Image (cartoon, rainbow, N blue to C red; front, side):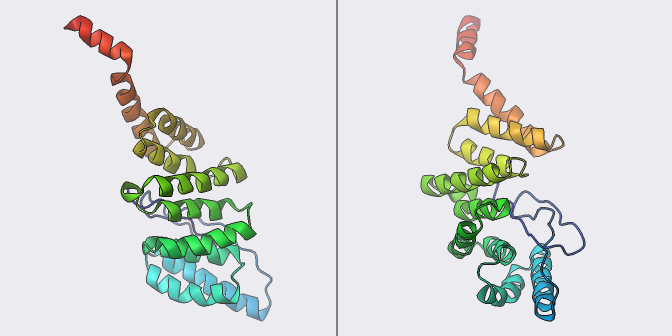
Length: 211
């Protein structure tokens, strides 16, 4: 598995396609007062989100960065700009944008979820410090919204990489409870459960008896 899912927060009148590696989740609605300035701001924000969803992160950054400079406290701009940086593997830039926004908006689960992805970077290259920071951000996302989709899944992947198979299975099980159609979560539950069973003392004893 590669880059964790990221979320875009702007309604562009159609749903984003969910992809496990570096994908976007269904997008929410941004409510901005509709005077002329905010109409232009909202339009640019929607265009940036569309570019991000169309897998054009460079163009998304070009569109979103001026908005961030105008309104650095806007969580929707931060979510989308941070998401673009994640797709570009510019992890430190993503962390700076998202961590500041998360401090200002501590009850925004999408910010914490994307911050988890930014801290983690590429799963297979992340060391213990990155894993721990990602775990804290993902855990905070679940504290804000226990039903946040894909967060338990990515926690499961991290715990799997750390060798904590029991906790990984628990995370994948929680994800499956939220989304019973999640084939990836089901796959990892079955695979890791088999690994745990094979490594159990009972299994060793059974093999010894057969020998």
